[in-house]
Structure formats: C-alpha cells, structure tokens
Length: 401
Image (cartoon, rainbow, N blue to C red):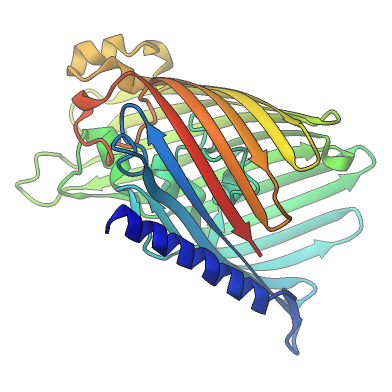
C-alpha cells in the first residue's frame, strides 16, 4: 500500500473511532445483571530516522507503520465477579502487521473485599505485572512517551511481556501510610514472534521457539495521593526450541531468563521523577557446548514537568547493556564477528505532550541514540547495515473513549 493509501486508512480509522465513541458516550450501561463498560483508543505515529529503520522504512522518508487500535469491555456481574477483555490491532513495522489479537481476556473473582484489604483471583489471558508501565504500555495516554523506555520494556519482544495465559493472585492492603499490593502471575507467556529468534540465532529459525511454564510477581507500595510509588518485580520465563526436523541446523535447546526490576516514581508538585533499574539473568543451553550464562543490565531516568495546564515536557536517559560483563560489546564482536554496537544502547530523549482535550492527545519526541541494542531486527535484517549512532524524530496523535 502506498503512503497516501496508508494515511487515508488512518484518517478513516480515526473518524470511525469518533463515531463509535459518540454511540457509547455512556460507557457504563445497566444490562439486567450487573453493569457493562466499553472503552477504546486509536493512536497513529510518524517516525523519521537518519539511520536504521524503526517500525517500517523510517530511514526512507519516514514511516506511518506504527499504529494501535483497541476496543475493551468489562462486565461486572456481581460486586465480586467481573469479566474483561481487550482486542487490539497493532501495526509496528515488519514485526506486527495489524492483525487483530486478544490482548487480554479474564475472569476476576474477589475473595475478600473490605475497606482495608482486597484479595482476589484471575484466570484467562492476563496482563503481566512487570515494573510500573507494562500493563499500560499499549495506551498512549498512560505510557511515558511515544516510545516506552526500551531498556526495560522492549517493543521488539512485546508479545512475550505484555500478557500470558494462566492464573493470577492479587492482594491489596490499604492503611494510613498508603497502599501495598502483591501480584503473582503464573502460566504460559504468549506465543513468541520472530524477534526472539533473531536475538538468539541471528535469523528466523526453521523450527519454533515455544514458551514453557513461567511466573512473574511484583510487590508495590503507593503513598496516599499516589505522590510516591515503589515496586520490585521479578520472575522466571522459560522457552524451548523445537527443531523443524532432521535437516534443521539448530538443535533442541532452551532459554531461561529471570528479570529483576526495581522501580520508583516521585511526584513533587508539577514534577514527575521516574526511574527503573533492571537485571536480566540469562541461561542458554542445548544449542551447543558449553551452556551460556550472562546478565543484562539496564536503567532509565525520566524527569517530566507540567509546563502549562495542558502541556508537559520531559527529558530521559535510557541505557541498555545486553551483557553487563561486556558493556562495550567488544568481546561479543571478537567471538561472533557481529557488530559490538548491537549489544548496547544509550538513548537521550526530549519529549513534549499536549492534552488537546480529555479525549485527544498529541506527542512529539527527539531521540539521540548511541548503539542498536533494542533496534527491531525484523526491520533491519542485515545487521551489518546498522549504524551505531542515529537520530529519531517522532510525532503521535491519540484518541480515546
């Protein structure tokens, strides 16, 4: 499809969302048994890079291939039992083609609900409790930028992190000093996309990489008024490679990684200071001796300030090391012959947000990046064509109802 055709498609989608929103202005509707709510959103971004491609051919005049559209609904049948689901269409370059998918769909049963405490269970396809932003990373109004900090929340492996199929236990304790929550999800992460295989094998493998039983948990604290938040997230995620057959050059092997994320956010007045630090412990075995173990490290610091009633600006430093024992990637380049800059990324970002109305929001960002550690490989299949230092300019328009 031509760029003009894609732009017309986006305009039509925005108009359609506006029509739908008009029809569901009252989003809480009695249905005889409980209440039913419907919400949705649509976002369209434009990205322009001077080197490398991000979500489409951004280095060839810019790309409109980053858009998100979703419709979600929840039905509270009783005060203690709710069902909810969201369908999402996401276009993100070569990695995601806009095919609708089920982002989440679950049943929620509250076992205990008092003024001071809540305990409950969920089952189905569940949003993963990881860090401060993982559950809202698809919602442009709630995430901290057009691009969420890539050192912590990789867009190229979004499907692996966003949700999983299984069970969820949660508890919340409210007191005079604030709220403490504990979340535990267990089951199977969603199917993997090509990016995981590119990261592990350097290409789309003939066989299939499947997820295995995994778990993720988080303990969080929020002060009264939500002026301070602190969280510790961790888990263990397991994947297994099943060869395509006797002719597959890649043997049966497994990958395990255990993320550990410390998150903090402070909101003094007009300012918002957010930082997250992560260690990712990897074990790769079965693909050939010896088994490989290494630890990834990443961190970001974002400082945002409300400039006017409807305007906010921010600056962010986002740093990623795929292997904290080889931060420059020099050892990786000597061992594999692949570019060292694919093992790290340091991203300085300036951003601006304009809340046009409660339903419409616009953003603009400039990124100055050193390294290609989080660049999607499906958009850049020849790793030797990647340039270490590159710039990104992006704008986004989003609507919600």
